[in-house]
Image: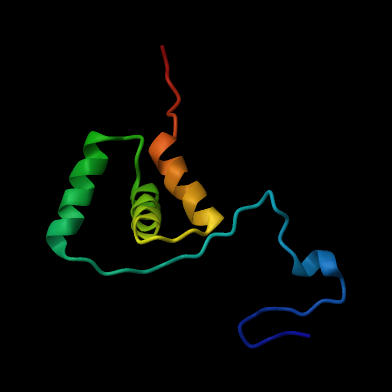
Length: 90
């Protein structure tokens, strides 16, 4: 059975579930003040290991954690952003 949004019902359970190894991503469109966008772009230019997606994910996880969110996934993203090791080329 097909849904208007393109989703499909399936009798096969494996087609309705997402394996644990594949992270689910949701695309988000956002408008922000121009000065904040400039500051983000300057930070990313100075820190090439960061990109806009990682920065926004880290900011959201940090905000939620600091507001008392105890969801294990939020805590994992928060700590992952703090302690992410970058690959070193020596």
